[in-house]
Image (tube, rainbow, N blue to C red; front, side):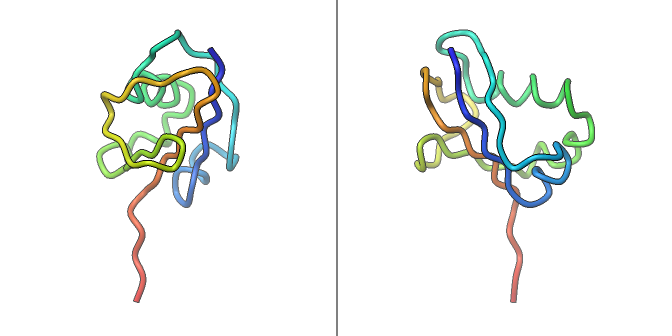
Length: 81
């Protein structure tokens, strides 16, 4: 299946793009997609524990299953003041 991955802030910087399309097995969990990204972009490893995930604009945990056409967002913590 094909999904779109949206990357923000430090995740975008680590991967070098704001979005990418990925082919993953049907029903793959968010955690599987994250593992694939970490294999391809080891510079993303330091952010792994602090990332939050959203699928189609709804927050999910890493165990959430994905479906063809989903949009997965990787969201690092945001600070401001």
